Image (cartoon, rainbow, N blue to C red; front, side, top):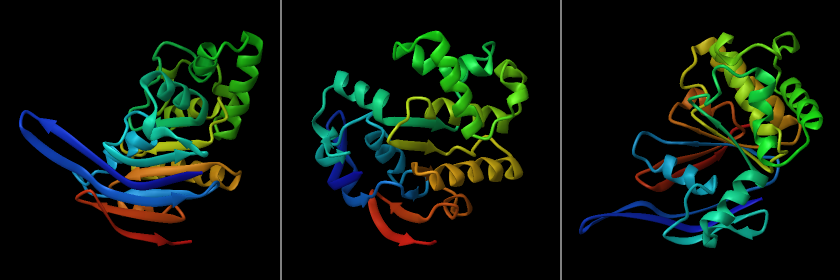
Length: 226
């Protein structure tokens, strides 16, 4: 599914150049559950932006489902994000005064899916994410943090993406609620979804089946743990 070859990312500020990613190479196969773990400043967020087609590398090649994402323009990157990638962020990014169903169905509006189909797809995604059916019509600002993150996960699933990319998804949650959300990712992975989890916490990373450790823009270790 994912193949990164010698990925480098350099930022220029005035005359100063900073190499954030220093030639990363790895493969993530379809159906894997991988954590990319590193401390603040390690380059993991930059790598996440590249994997999520939010940015392109300075040099190197990034293939997603056989397509060379590293050479796409902004419009083509937007299409990849819409069609191939589901995002789950630390900040839930929900519309506060919109219903759960409406929040989840929003990507389908932009995709031009008819209203009656949108609602059915949204309901299926919510059930898949383990969300309580009794709360489908609640406003998102009436939900707990864990419930909001499940809504965000459901929203990421509605376009049936090839890749589910979660950036510090438990960062705004207490430990117990975070564990419940991580269990949801494990279930989704067992259902066949490819999941990449970005985190700085080892106990969170250990929920994945493989951890790519990054520090100072380089891969320190790539370990399978389950």
